[in-house]
Length: 376
Image (cartoon, rainbow, N blue to C red; front, top):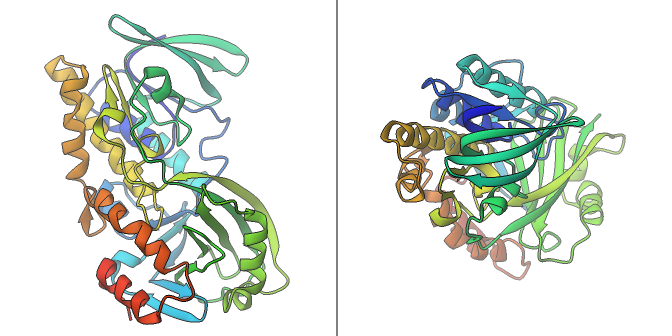
């Protein structure tokens, strides 16, 4: 098989990259290692109210679970309401949303394959040859360009020898999708801090009047038992245990790593005939660890970069560095994607303030006002 561009990974970043490039007329193949695109889910499924405007993707009721009208921050019994559109959004169903985006890429002209796992990659004169297992059948795809959209454990970047220049601010997460809760008309994202969640936080993201994603994420360097922390959060954290109640059902258990460090430096994102997007490029907001919209924006910026590279007939690393300029200019909520690395500067201090009981309440309130300027 041959193509102009091979996109490895059909998550939001890979599908948006494939869609953008295919719309230009280039020959694009999009592969996904899992049998079903969007499965397994490895995130809390919350998105910003700005996502559809920022990415140009139309809303569709099929993947929207609950409209969210604000965000509530907790430090035990302290509560802060984050107001304004920045803190509104939706909880979505990734099992529907991800296939929806892949379908858009397919409609734009990309060839989409699931159950297609990239297992090796080697450099050739005019690009790359990638060995792919299509189920039990191994084939080779020869591509002039490869996009690594294969997540935080990206093999594509390693095989290509891209610089590992990230500080790897990894979160490890455990989440339950739960039902028979006392959510009712509650329409907030609930984000909860405390000394039990070192370098991270716990959350409740409502999906309906009875269903929610309930999870915890902490710094991977901390020796923390996620199961114990999640049990504590569900049963003992102030106010949250009332919302969850005692008759809940656990529908699904999810987990994974989140690279909450802001985008890699450009030498870790691009090389000759190759580029990384989404979690593979660490496009995640460093405090909330929100990654869906940054991933989609990185995919669009990558697509624009590659279209220009093919037009100029220059697929080398030095030209591809325009990727950095393109993604930084993308609008993310009410700022630009460039802000992710700036937020990282404050993230360690923020988590310290919100993980220590001895820090005075006024300091927490000041830090929220400084970073977000929207609390009540």
